Image (cartoon, rainbow, N blue to C red; front, side):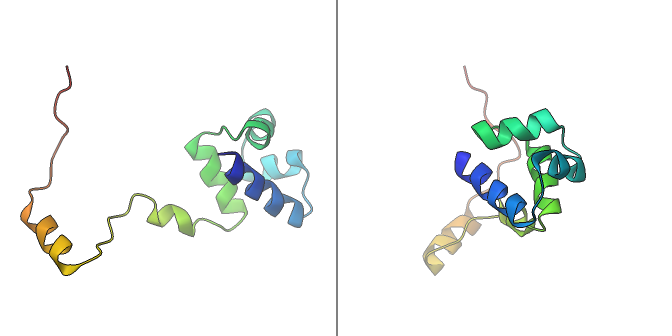
Length: 91
């Protein structure tokens, strides 16, 4: 998380924006953005807003998109298994 925050900060500084100016442009609260740069903690919504300002949203499209297969056998095995509609009850 801190690595992501560090990269966002680097991109912000490349654009010569202060934390306040960047937070305002992204529509994120200044305190929330400042905390993000310090701790790496941020809501998903605010992270997406930051990515939009930095024109770096393409990574979100691939997040949890699907599994890549190493062989045709893996793909065929996946096709044979039934896709779950919901999780099983725990406990």
